[in-house]
Length: 456
Ligand SMILES: Cc1cc2nc3c(=O)[nH]c(=O)nc-3n(C[C@H](O)[C@H](O)[C@H](O)COP(=O)(O)OP(=O)(O)OC[C@H]3O[C@@H](n4cnc5c(N)ncnc54)[C@H](O)[C@@H]3O)c2cc1C
Image (cartoon, rainbow, N blue to C red; front, side, top):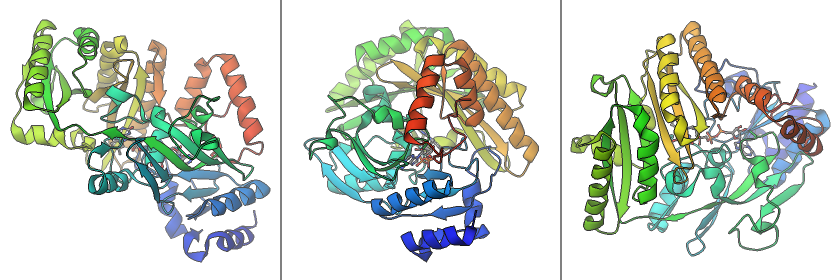
């Protein structure tokens, strides 16, 4: 590759301030906060306009240089660290909130808009509406999260965040702009159907199909009041039915499970965290009564927690990392799997066993998705960033978890490349054949985040 020639062409597109191949600038892009090992990057570029994205993609295609689209870079599983060098396209400058449609309940935004930005904008201008956001740091992008089947406190009620995408504007590897959803034929970005739905192609494909430049995401009415009804359960085998019953009763906004060996009082229990919402105090009281009764019936018990703890849990988004077992050196990566409800007890056992085997304090949990249609089960493995052996230990634990989740019938979430290969080993051959065919059609030179979802 003629580095200077490419650099000059990239400078022509975005200006010298917004592209670099300086090792000091590239350092941070060669790694992420998870347990993956650093990998080399050739250039980082920060486009501002869709026309710039088009020009960069055309250049990359001509020169056969990989492009890795990046939002907040906080997925943790190495998805934005290049595998075969190339250009990291940092979307941060494409951060316009284009339209909030309160009546039609969607936000049309550019791909670099962060969850903190959208949340603040809605709080200031549309306090009755709430966006789907994960319990992740506010610098993550709404696009990056929705595009990996992310989930948050609205997901139990309304589904994972990928399902909340109404429409996309995407620059495909041919450099052309494509629109998907109602925006392909209407001024309103309000739905993805009823036309053949291609949006799924861009979700959990980890930037291998194109670069999303705009998206429309659903917004939801904000409840007047919110409270939590905590429960404590000793026998995980009762959880699937208990949770299923809670969803039948339609009393929960969000349902989370927490299983941790620290603090000591949590060891041996599953902590059930059910969020309830209502218009009046009376409504909350009634829902609390219903839940207490359900806990009792399932040989679990209601738990009163001190106000200061409850307030931490009521923060939206919750700063989930507070609960992780940070080792000296501050690293953690959590791996997840989408599982059917009935596999929750098995996953608790698997997560606990793998953590203990690797000398990591068990820190696991689950979030219900779509009224109990599935659960996102997560296991957090902490490590010391300054200790390569400890990082390898965490990587091994993650890989074992992916394997175990697949064996019992779950699907690893935001899996790193080794995990993606495990998934594809188990995948129906015709699914793989179609994936390969579509990918070759859209990206014949294989420039989009190569290494990911590569059908061998
Ligand atoms: C403390 C902590 C708590 C977390 N809690 C949650 C949680 O509750 N729920 C949850 O879902 N996640 C959670 N996460 C995981 C993760 O941070 C989020 O899912 C996050 O939203 C990912 O968004 P991002 O902008 O960082 O994406 P990135 O990591 O930048 O990108 C994710 C993937 O999407 C691709 N991509 C990004 N932008 C584009 C684009 N414009 N076009 C095409 N492809 C693109 C990337 O190539 C990559 O493959 C948590 C992480 C941390 C550190």
